[in-house]
Image (cartoon, rainbow, N blue to C red; front, side):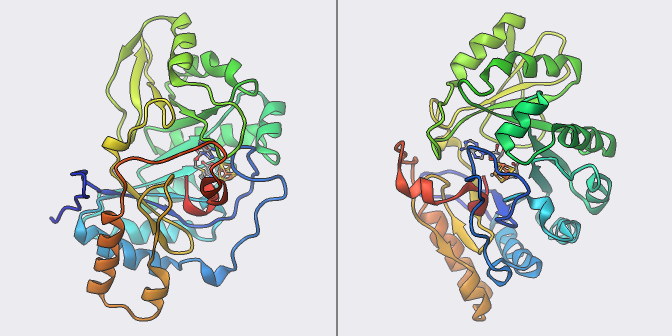
Length: 323
Ligand code: SAM
Ligand code: SF4
């Protein structure tokens, strides 16, 4: 097996794939209320094109892929893509990040198609607040999605909560409690300044959760990622902190991102991308595409350069690149 090693010695073995820029929600930290202009369908990579890129990347050292968006489940027949990716030699894991709104109806077929696990975004346990944060969402549907994922054996189910001061930060202890009561694996994510809403540092969240008892350092539930994990005594589930702002994890970064319109991004938060779609459609050879993937790896910065109000970041919508 080949290995993709970047200029700073990091092993790149993980690709996040945004399959669509469309979404059935309009979360306050991700999209404006009116949504963003959707890309015409023919600008999106087809499933065959995604599989071609993954096949080449797998030969170069990518082993794990995660489907994201936009909301990946709004793209028609996602289960077919899951099946295609799961059969590619070298791909050991296909996973999904979803808002869970329509997961209940798809969980079983996704599992059958080879999906291994899901991360479900959930920022509040209060239904009015859920509607305010997501603008279009229904809390009960995401909760049904979580249950359906558990029932289908898509485990461990991880819950991602983006913590926003004055909006949902009063619920961090309730979410931590769910690691005991429901065995959820909860990850608290620092808000990235794509909007000006106030970020809550992980250390602050950790401190509040300690009111429930000692947080013991724990190992990660299956899957890989930038979180630091802890566990409350007696809890089946874990508590993770993803702290892109206060504890950047660039030195451990093992990922690249493929956007829905076929650009490879070495880093979510730094300018720079390599177009794979046009060369692919123009008949590029495998070795030419390998060269472009190597170009993206070589462009991976040592760390991101982020400034609040950074217009580059503001313009690069999470929904298109894939958060
Ligand atoms: N629609 C799916 C979902 O919401 O899970 C997948 C795409 S979404 C862009 C992926 C993840 O990015 C979600 O967990 C979401 O909460 C997170 N995210 C979006 N905007 C963010 C921001 N400004 N700061 C931190 N996380 C963010
Ligand atoms: Fe949609 Fe996910 Fe962005 Fe919310 S975070 S608007 S669910 S893409």
